[in-house]
Image 1: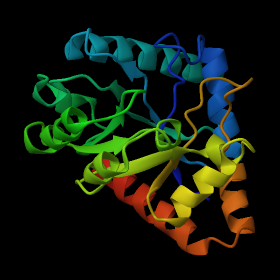
Image 2: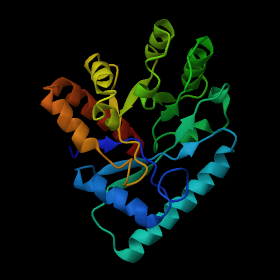
Image 3: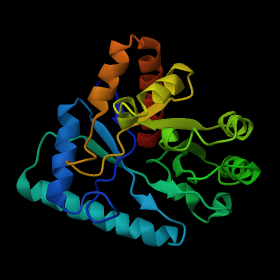
Length: 239
């Protein structure tokens, strides 16, 4: 478990709809640490209506606020914090100036939130442009949220590109969507797990429970794949 990096989290205080205070953020981080997580990515929402540089400045201020609290309170037993963003899709995103600065750490991996609607050729083309023009490798965030209503041919066209796919751990724990989520993992569509944590109430860290569920289902190969890609992304991000 300690090799697993949580690639998706909204805990930087005041950045988005996640944690509001440093105290709340520390609770989330300590919860992750107790689960064996030693590295987490802060991925606050980025919407292209805001200039990249303005977003990065807000993120820096939120990190400094959190770090000051951690130091003043002598907080221990939290994972190492790495920086990124959850980038909302829009047409032309591949040509966005400084888009590479929103990648996870020093990597080329960009956590991308796709539209909550049926995708078509435009979306397929835009994902391709992110790689060709933007020079990044998209990680499709929480695939379980939009998988069911996609055209199979268009979806296949996107998944065949140079992309990785992230699933929220909650999808493996929610009885309403667990069966479909398990199918995606079994088919090898999902390479990465993340918590998409926002707080300690209804969206708390839960990677340990999701991995325990996969272990109970005797899906050692799937766990190995998730660990492998987690290490790859995290290693490049820290490089």
